[in-house]
Structures are given as structure tokens and as C-alpha cells.
Length: 401
Image (cartoon, rainbow, N blue to C red; front, side, top):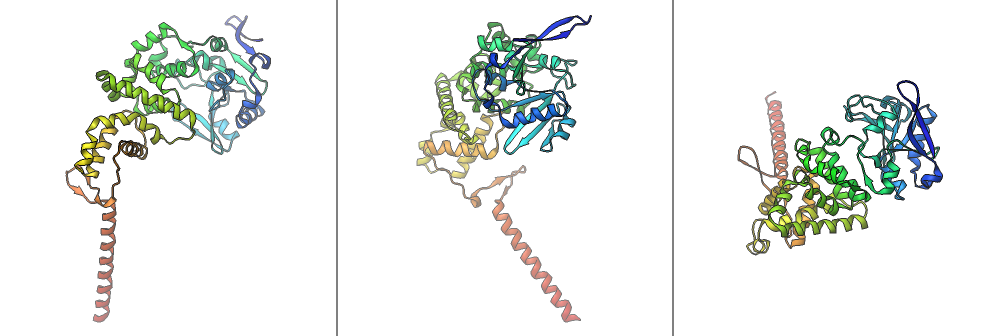
């Protein structure tokens, strides 16, 4: 074990971080993505420092193969862009770089400063950057060239003990970014690191801070939960800490008033987790079925609807509207939600096939417009008539001459 030293205000040496060597952390080199290694090497060749950071280091320590490799460096986004032609700068306020290798995208960020707390956008040093990380288990820096882990906050110790501990002071961490509450529960459920009683209590008392968070960020977090393979544990914990009412308010309201619905909803999530763990590259619509199926069942007596031969188009339109409102503020792609609704209805025994000509769309004035297919046919006929008129008028002018 090595020690990284710095200097205090008076120039005296002080301990900054613990450095774990290859023999101590035992991370096998074959688990490091070759393209992530190339990015780090190229940044170093150009005179910059670079590390693999965050969840990838955590997963490597516990023996898992990371899904993503995030990289942090002292190079600014513009300099990173010059080094890698296969890259693009993203973000307006919080700028970082995506380096692209085929289907893989690596997120390369610059060390951030603590001048504006943990949410500012000023560039800084690694000593400052570590203090902006949310939890100690995500605040580890791995140098794949020297094969060293740099640990400023005791993250390796907390991983081994199975403890989820915040880096940022507990009175500030969720005020600066409320989404960290969802991440805390996700990390606790997926890594096996336990939250302390004080941290869980703070989350429950700070749940209301999620109210002003944008739908796009809540959608992103909800999709991460669905894709995690641990949605049952995460949602159960979110329900107990009052966070789920901000992620899925309609579903939470139904569970609050109907214990049977809550039981079925959570059972569906267990089924979803089994599917995600078994199969890869599952389309989102297939996963959404597990969220909306019991809600669709509660909408009406579907057997009666089938027997009475209700209007298929009208029935589907109403179901789609109800499901769209049910999943808010999550905003999945329309095609994926439509796929989920049709799949759920098919499983119930309702076959939905909507001919394009029969579908009518009601505009804001309340008037009915014909389908797009009919409108296109109308336009073709109109063009033909105009063409005939032009030919006729041209022929008449020639006769007059």
C-alpha cells in the first residue's frame, strides 16, 4: 500500500490518499475494456493524467465486469476533442466528451472544482473532483496503465464492509441534487452495500425535493431501474421511503388504496427482473408491459368488451390515453408504449389491429379529420385535376393563336 501526500496551507506534508497496487486490489487486466485503455493511454501520451472512475472501478473490485467505463482527466473538453477525432462535445452547462468506438460510447469528463459546491461547472483538480462524488464507493480512481487505485475517501474499505456512505455532507447532498436519493437506493439494492439508519431517514424526510425535478431526469432514472435487473428491490425501497410517488404517482396511488394491486405490481417487477437477467437487448416496450398490464386489467371488464364487440379503434385509443397518463412523468417513446399496450392486450385476449383508413383524429376545434392515407390520396387527385386544367388551358391558347 502506498500513500499519496499533498501540502497544507503552511506547506507541510499531509496524507491525501491511499494507493492500492495490483497485488492488493487484484483487478484482472483482461476485464478492462481495450478501448477504454486506449483512451487513457492516448491522454497520457499527450501529457495529461487520466483515470477510469466511478461505478466501473467499484464493479471491478467486487469481481463484476462493468457495463460502462467512464474516464476522467485534467484535459479540457476542447483538448480532448482535438486528441480524439472520433469524439463530440455534449452538454451546454456541464460539458463533457463522448469518444466513440463503433457501437461503444465512452464518457470522458474533466476534473471539476468545488468552488460552487458539488454542482458547479468549473474545472479543478483530482483533489477537488473527488469531493464532488456522491458516495465513497463511486469515488475511486483507477490507473489501468500503472494498475493503481487511488482512494481519497475510504471507498475500498466501504466496499469490503458493504457500507453506503456519502462523500458530500448529509445536510447538503440531496439539496444540491435530489436525484442522488434514487441513486442511493439503486446502489444499495444492486451492490449489497447497506444504508445507515440516518441516511435512510434523511432520504425519507427529503423525498419532497424530487417534486421540481424535470420529467426527463425522472424518466432517465426510471429507465435505469427497469433495466437494472433489481427493480423489485429498488421499487420496494422507494415505496418505503416515499420516493416512488414522484417516479410513478398514479401507480403509487393505486397501491396505496389497493393492497392486492400492490402485491401484483411487485410480482410483475420480479418477473421483469428475471427476464432482464436472462436476456440481453430487450426492447423497452417489452419491459413496459410489466408496469402497465395490471393497470390495463383494472380499466374495464375486457371479456364483456370482447363479447359486445366494442369499436376496436375507440377502445385502443382510450386505453392508450389512460396508459400514457398512468406512466407519467416517465415519457417513453410512443412506439414503445404502443408496443407495450398491444402486447398486454394480446395477453389478456384482446387482439388490436387498427386499419389506417378507419382511424380518425380529432383536432383542437373538435372537428374530425380523415386519416393521413386518405388525405394523401386526396392530394394526388387534386394534383391530377390541376394538371388537366393546365393542359386544357394550354390547348385552348394554342387554338386561339
